Amino acid sequence: MAASEKLITTVSTKGQVILPSAIRKRREWVAGTRLVVEETAEGVLLKRTPVFTETRPEDVFASLPYSGKPKTLEEMDAGVLAEARRRHARD
Image 1 (cartoon, one colour):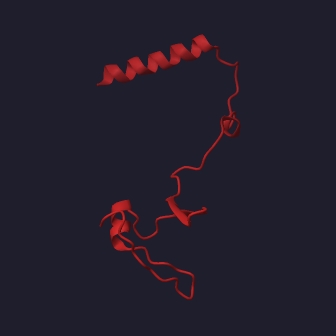
Image 2: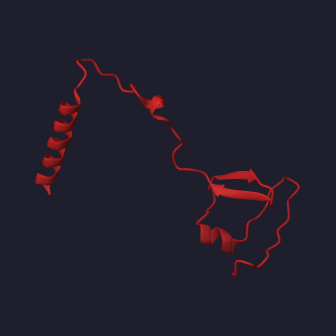
Image 3: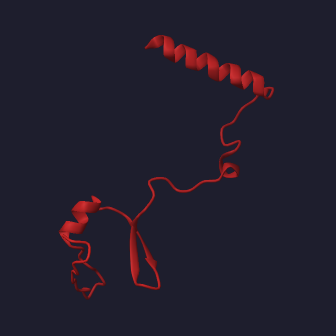
């Protein structure tokens, strides 16, 4: 289907619109795909919803309980390096 080809669909009495199968296949929109609907100056825009909701660091800081003395940056770096070495040695 050419990008300039115009396709026509009809709004049902329930407000439903059927998207042409060529578009659904190209976009990989299967049954159950959730879409964001945005009204723009040119018309209506449909976009797939993000897999994960947007979060900010302040939303998740301290979300896991930890009791103990806070780690220093050097201790954190050493822990990350030790885990990387452990995983690398495993392969």
